[in-house]
Amino acid sequence: MNANVQMGIYDVDALRRDFPILSREVHGRPLVYLDNAASAQKPKPVLDAMMSFMTNEYANVHRGVHYLSGVATERYEEARRRIQRFLNAAYEDEIIYTKGGTEAINLVASSYLSPRIEPGDEIVLSVMEHHSNIVPWHFLRERQGAVLKWVEVSDLGELDPADVARAMSPRTKLVAISHMSNVLGTKTDLREIVHAAHERGVPVLADGCQGAVHGTVDVQALDVDFYAITGHKIYGPTGIGALYAKRAHLKTMRPYQGGGEMIREVTRANVTYADPPMRFEAGTPPIAQTVGLAAALDYVEKVGREKIAAHETALARAAQSRLKELNGIHIIGEALDKGPIISFEAIGIHAHDLATILDREGVAVRGGHHCAQVLMDRFNVAGTARASFALYNTMEEVDALIAAVGVARKVFG
Amino acid sequence: MDQNLRELYQEIILDHSRHPRHFGPLPAANHMAEGHNPLCGDRVKVYLQVGADDRIADVSFEGRGCAISVASASLMTEMLMGRTLAEADALMGGFLHLVKGEDAGALNEDDRERLEVMAGVSAFPMRVKCATLAWHAMKAALDNETVAKTE
Image (tube, rainbow over all chains, first blue to last red; front, side, top):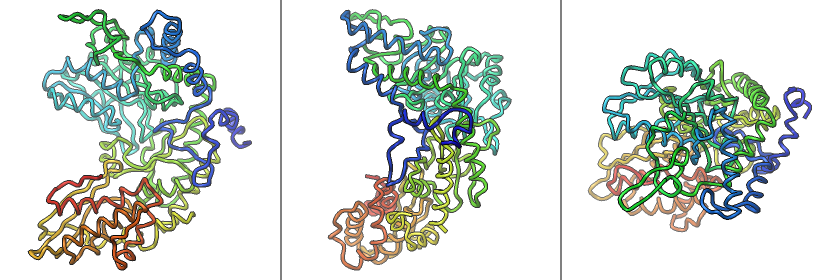
């Protein structure tokens, strides 16, 4: 405990008590959960908020005139304003609920970009994108003849905004770029990229699924056009995420899915649509999940986003430098400005063998391609092991990671 | 280190994974199929040369993968050599039971002994697919498909 308090950022042991799952064991050892970039664990305030909402306040939203429908709708819209504040969006109607980051990006591809694409039009993206920020653009390539223009990263995994600028042409219709790589941890200079794109009249979509977790995000200061987030990586429930989109864009966007709640009027001959954000929210949404996400954002802000980032960065720096000291360990992604995500290879040990052995030591890491096969090809690896840190991880857990990697190296001698 | 891990990564498994037998393409092959595990990106190609007598005259594999998948493929090629198609099919059936921790009664004593090194996989349900990848590819090849169905 002292070592962590001495890090001087916050009392991590006190925070750990908010996360019930962290006290469990796996394979007879204390759980060391370092798969946070895949999904983070949930604190009690999030669980309690969802339970309390479903116990006392639940009904469908934007439907009934009865009391509970009104209460549920208020909570649901309150959560939207919570996300608005979290991203510092100018207006609450710029926040569209989605089931996660993937749906947020698909929504932009389908409702914003698809109607604007002529054969030969270009979409600029980096080689370190997650498949969720690649495949929707491949759809437009397959179906409408869009051309994907790939921006390379350096051997350290850094993305030069000047390379993004160079990849643009008069045919570029969108720049789609991660705010933080889910594999390398690289933070992109979003402000610079947006500036370069806007000079050419090109809008920018940022995948914020990692970026929003490990730092503050101000979509107005960034001037970014679209920003996608997901709830479950930021200590909220699964099944809920959001798209931030500038009002000016939303007004021009066609509906996404058709159904209840997204219409103004439906007749036999015709249909007219609701205004944003409702236009893009067909069907009964995951209501309790919005309440859970709002509670997660409250939790994160109560702890302090800058403090969390500082804590996680200290852990990741220590882990990365200690892994580097080991023979036969190769770090993939050593950008100067990076979040708490470390991908590594142990020479002669496949990522899945490594992850299996670490798991038996109680250490949960991800092994594989991390939904980033283009990036795996760039670095010529089949997969990596990835340790990713959250607000509740400790220096003792860094020790456990290093010790477990030692066990793996012993097994494979 | 725990006992399950020791059983999974036995010396003989590590040896097969470091020095896979019958590794590389087989120019005389008349059956070939590819197995792909999208979870980890591992790929394996299995080549078989089946004679007019329905016996496997030669077999090989190539690809990249974890220690479990490479060792399993390597062991498979050793065991298939010279068998009839019916025997290969029975061997695969027994193997699938074995790695899932089920009764592998169809295997004869000798085969069971040789495959016993793979039985440790049954304690690692997430890794059973690694062990079966090459076997599914072999089955696809013998069924004259070119891509393995992984369950």
